[in-house]
Length: 131
Image (tube, rainbow, N blue to C red; front, side):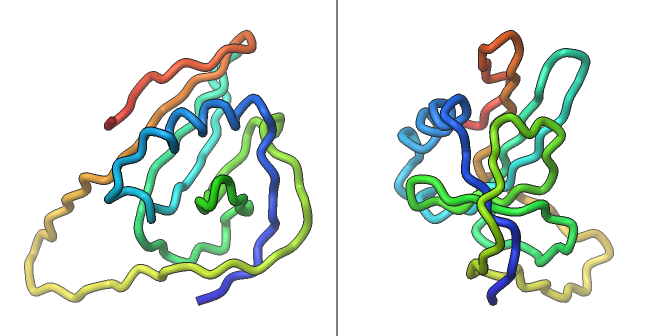
C-alpha cells in the first residue's frame, strides 16, 4: 500500500549513529522498517528506534526518510535538529495484517531489534540495545 507523507533528510550527526546500527544488522534484519521517536528530557534528547517488518497505517506519522536503502518512519520529532524537510512524497509500506484470535489474552512476542539513544552536549550514547 502507498502512503503520502512528508519526506525528510537526516543530518550528519545522526547519520554516524545510524551507520553504527545499520553496519551491524544481522542478515535476517536487513528488511526491517525503522520507527523513530525523539523526546526531550531536561537537556537530553532521547531517540527511540524500534523495528518492524510491517506497519499499521497511522495518520499521526510526522514523515519518513530513507538512508542506506532502509526506510525510517518518523512518529514524533521533539528535537528537529537531526532532520530537514525535503517535501511531500509517496512511499510503499507493508501493511500489518490483523489476525483474529479466539484467545482471551493474545500473546505478544517481539524479538525485533530496538535501540534507545541519548544526545547531550554534542555526544551520542546508547542507553539500551537489543543487539
